[in-house]
Image 1 (cartoon, rainbow, N blue to C red):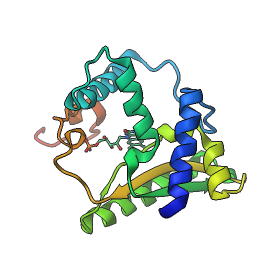
Image 2 (cartoon, rainbow, N blue to C red):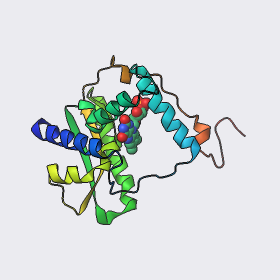
Image 3 (cartoon, rainbow, N blue to C red):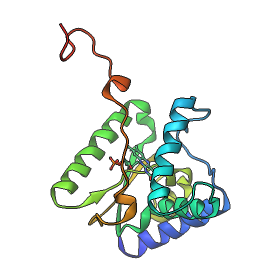
Length: 177
Ligand SMILES: Cc1cc2nc3c(=O)[nH]c(=O)nc-3n(C[C@H](O)[C@H](O)[C@H](O)COP(=O)(O)O)c2cc1C
């Protein structure tokens, strides 16, 4: 979806986020994350804003960046993935598979994508602007466009947790007897 409707959507989302940073997500939103997840999220967030030249104590500019993100980082197009509510949690995996397929296809065509959940704090804006029936839930948005590789936010050094931290090998592990 692009053109005029994306403008209406992005403006509606930014207005909603300005009025209420917490929103009212219609999906379970993680609360009271364990410290290791909180720390990691903070580290990644700070790495991005640092790359943008924003001091970690600069709440105003950090807030502006968050609003920019809620409006899909001004991407020219956005893919909005929805799911029938009655499919419940099981079909979340299907949505994830579709999302990955779309992102790989886009990448193959030289396009960049950025899966996002931040704007899902304001589901009513999607329902209203896009006419999504209440029988469906908005699951994921994927802004899409030609990547600007030299943009600071696309150039910061990513840290990754090691595979040992998120994978459990049962049986034959690589490099082990
Ligand atoms: C399900 C999902 C939701 C995400 N939501 C957001 C988001 O709301 N805002 C954001 O800036 N990044 C979000 N991200 C992270 C980015 O889309 C991206 O995956 C991350 O920056 C890692 O990019 P990299 O692989 O280039 O390091 C999300 C990622 C996933 C997989």
